[in-house]
Image 1 (tube, helix red, strand yellow):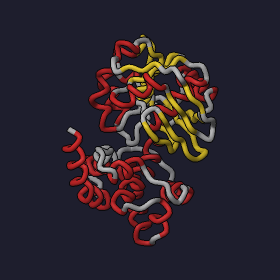
Image 2 (tube, rainbow, N blue to C red):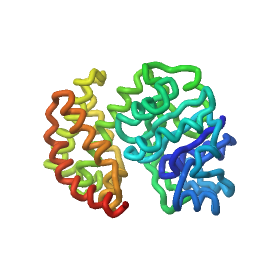
Image 3 (tube, helix red, strand yellow):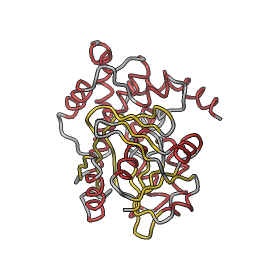
Image 4 (cartoon, rainbow, N blue to C red):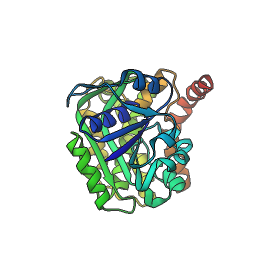
Length: 310
């Protein structure tokens, strides 16, 4: 399968590297230091599922050089999707489609607006990976799972074909009948975990063990679920407990990517996670005071980071 991975960060480098190792035709749409590292040194993947070095990797910052993709895995930061989306059309083969793997719940609709809804498949991933350096990705923990589903619900031959390719590469794949619900369940985990982590500057083990902070986590989770319900998303009543169990199962030093970006002074997914809950809650008539607090506390640092990045 001809696959283009848009973004060579923690998620894109890991999945693209595993697919390439399995013999698939993989190209990376990358830029800056990541592009230079991939072109000059290749890609190193360090994972419990295998450590390997791909000495030759095809990467470019020009979509025209990556034409003919049957699948584009969109693995950039959420806030980059809107600018990237119009550039993806030249990559796709006539029957090709894009799969967003960002944190958040808005990327698929942004891509659909640019590419057309039939050319987008719903997707999300559960894994912890990050770049140790450009062209060097570290995957920690045993979980390496991608969920796929048609935006209108259900599976399809194209999803089953992609799932088979990814499983052959060593990636666990769930084909969901309701990918929107799966997206919102992950969102109920990642937005509160990242937001509370960024405000407290604390890892999972600390956040979940302090009663006051655990209470803030719980209220933030419940707010996300309330917004989902108001938008007609179906989630089981035990989802709050399930999400808290996910946080309890993390290693004590675990942190979210948004938390790490904010602490490091980098532009983050704040607006696409905490900001999205506030924005979508307002449009649905749902009060989200915990997220309003988190956004107010973090937005000054976000603005400073973006000003420095210009």
